[in-house]
Image 1 (cartoon, rainbow, N blue to C red):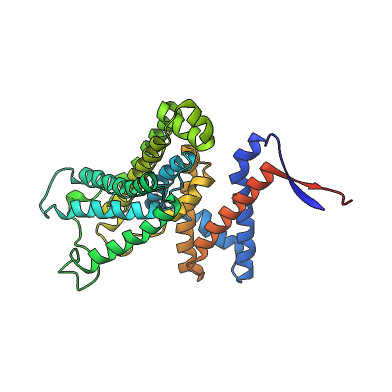
Image 2 (tube, one colour):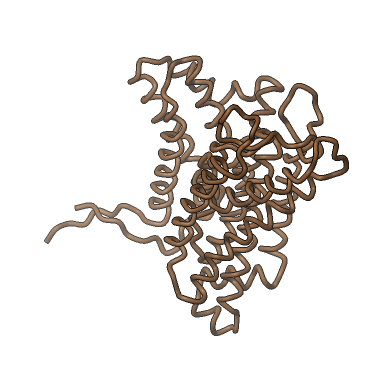
Length: 353
C-alpha cells in the first residue's frame, strides 16, 4: 500500500524549481490537449509562448496584461504571507477603476497638466476603501475575510453596472453602457505612437521593489509575516494581529485600485462593463506561482500574460475556444499544487500486516 509521508526537511532547491516543473507539466498536458482537439501542438504552443514576443505590438499587448496582473498579485502576496486571505482583489480593482474614472470625468476636453497622476492616486484610494470594508468587518465582527472579500466583488460589479446604465452613461454614446471617453490629460502617456504601451509599465518594478523593501527590510513587514507563519509566536513577541490585518489589506487594496486605474486610464480610456476582466482571480495563481516573492511574481505575471495573449491568438488563428486561457491557468495551478505536495511529502510503500 502506498501512502504519503511528510519530509522532515523539504529540499529548498526543489521548492524553488517547483513552478518550473509545474510549467513543464502544464505545457505537456497542453500539447496532449491540442492534439486531442485535432490542432497542431507545436503551432499552438508557438502561438502561446513565442508569438507575443515576436513584434513590438505583441510586446505592447503583453505589457497591457502584465501590469494589472502583477500589481494585483504583489498585493495579494503580502496578504497571504500575513495569513489574511483576501480573495476579493477583483472588487478592489473595480472600485479603483471607478474612483479613477470619476476623477477623469471631472477634467474637461481642454484640460492640461498631469491629471493622470491624480487619476492613479484616486484609484489607490478607491481600492483601499474597498479593502478597508473587509478589514473592518473582520476586525469588528470577526467576519470571515474570504467570504466578505469575495461577496464584495459582486457588490462592486453591480455598482459598476448601475453607474454605466444610469448616472455615468455617456449621453452621446448611442445608449451603450459606457462612460464618456476620458480627456487626454487624464490618460496615461504612451511613449510610442501606434502602440498601446503606456507609462503604467514602469509601475511594475517600482511596486516590486517597494513591496520587497516592505516585506524584508522593515519591522512592520517582518511582524506581519511572522503573524502569518506562526500566530502564537507573533502574539508572544507582542506583534499586533490587527496591524497585520489592516496593514496588509490596505496595501493590497491600494495596489489593486492602482491596477484598476491603470486599466481605465491606459488601454480602455473610459469605463465600460468590461472593466472586471477576471484579473483579480488570475492574480491569485500568479502570486502562488511566483512563490509569494516580488521577483517571482514579476516573472509569473509575464507568464500569465503570455497565456492571455496566446489564448487570444489561438482563438483567432486556430479556432480554439476562448476558454483555453482559463484551462491553462487552472492546469498550471493544479500542477503547482501537485509539485508542492510531492516536495513536502514523499510516496512510501508500506507492507500490509
